[in-house]
Length: 468
Image (cartoon, rainbow, N blue to C red; front, side):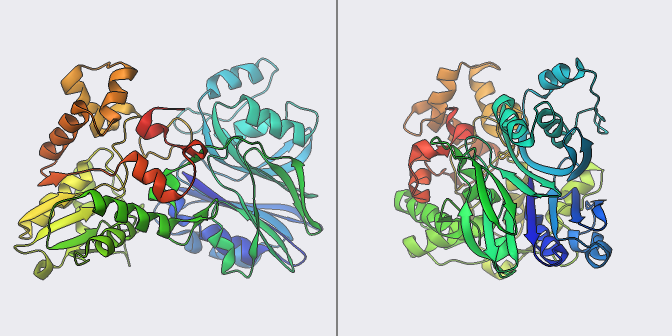
């Protein structure tokens, strides 16, 4: 995953760019960069590995030495970006959020025209570089951006910095957001709108699906009007979004309260306390506790002062130990208690099983698990939001393979996704037993959609339902 921030200012923009980009640290842990443009000195770029050090530490020097009136920044879990490129359209910098499923096909087509690409260490092509190459196939930047949106299978949202301004383009079905902020000195564009509120900006607009704008100190000009169809990723609210975020006017924190409330209305267990798995499970649990009247408590806390989210050794056994070491039990709230825990989701199940065992070891009598979203049935093919690259990474698909064989039909998979079917009940029972839960009950898809307050047709729910 990744998040970006761009700013155009009548004054030096680096302070806003530095902190606006840093506010996207929850969306990436591996690579980060900033590019600025100054009329006198031109472009300046900095890229760093942030796997074992936070963005602010790695870019402290650049925050004091870079100068410019415009800039873009990115924090990523994958590729190094922003990229600074010289092309037929002049020099520009580009950063992207999204996924390109047909990269090999597009690369092959471009290579026929005698183009070339740098390979990353894993042998793949940097998708941001590929997006720039696609844009360069057309006679101007606007046509190039539209062409990229058209031919990319998956999704792509773009910030593109030129000496004349920043082009911002939201992917054609609006799967990821771009919010525009405004203040007297200029404008900014970013993934997370809360990133600019503390910097003195106020909300200007959210780009619609496929909308392309150019941002200068004179204003925000729409170059391509938004489309009518939207499929914004629902997992934004459930997991990836920061509590202070909002998308399409819907608050992440409020949506999570709503999820917990609706889950409580369908539940019949009577635990002693309700707790949330930090961090994204907490708000769901508060909503559940408020609705059910069962006390909310924190039977464990996560120790974060010196533990970078991305700090992990290469040895797998040590990785598991460190993941467990971050959770500190409060045994007085665990011993002989029946606990109901809410997490945002269950992907592979490994981490939640270890958390459950850790609670039993600390004296818990029962551990009831309530994921805030339905069973994940399909790995995301649009924006990598389901935290899994393969269907068989998902515990649901491994259990289904035991019950049905390795290649069940789509019709069978959809029956397993139906919470009113016998197959669904059998799958959930097997997952609960495998992970050693006292009981397991998932949130329902219809309740999760209701919690957002948006029409179903505007939401992407592919990873749960398999429906495009």
